[in-house]
Image (cartoon, rainbow, N blue to C red; front, top):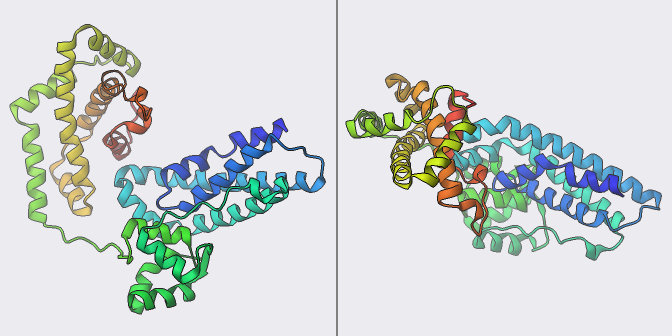
Length: 358
């Protein structure tokens, strides 16, 4: 049994990441991961004597391997785009792009569930189908139209009920179809994902009207702020903290020494970090508005790769020391590690200029 328990424990690391990071856009991955967790829970407590049980385990192993391969493919392809666009904008884009992945994850979930029944031989060992966390009105529509235990309906059946309920026309249905339909079916998972992003009734995103003059003024204000003497004093003070030949670990240790031995200096450094970080976070927010803002930044060549690298090399380690030792967030009730709690701006900027600090 050790061999199979090891498979269950170690096999689906990419699927676990996908279920955690992308659950709003691809809830099928979270449901599939739930079935894998059941497999891990029961595998150590059963005897494998029957041939059909051995076959069931081999099938589950194969299904998890295939799902994990797809999960890694999706994470590798989507990771950089997610860093640049931000979670909300990326999830909306992913809803329409991930049809093939969603169908595969749902199919594997069903196959693993059937083999788990063979493996456990008792229905009550299995967890019930993960409940769909739909908005209240959306859940009411689904249960009253299709029944509480119905997990999937055909596109025609769905549109018939949805049109009667909300009086929508064919054009509107075609507009929401890419976000809902997987192999001409709507599942509770795809319905949940669309309602989570767009509400109920489902209102697809429209391209916002951008006030280019206001956008240009925001960018001008940002560049002006950087060149103010007060900002410059803090920027150069931070820049001079890290020696050119100092690697990241050495710099973090030097910061820890300051934190424990010179509280006044630490407060001055951390305050400067907050002010500088605020400017780069506003840069990220404006950049994410879209093509118009990105072209404007290209025209003014601000902030430029060199300044971005300096910001990451200096401010990220200060932020990390502040997070771990000053705010002590890794040891708080939530126990959120730095990798999950750090501001988005650092991964965004690293991806934007393809920079890896040493």
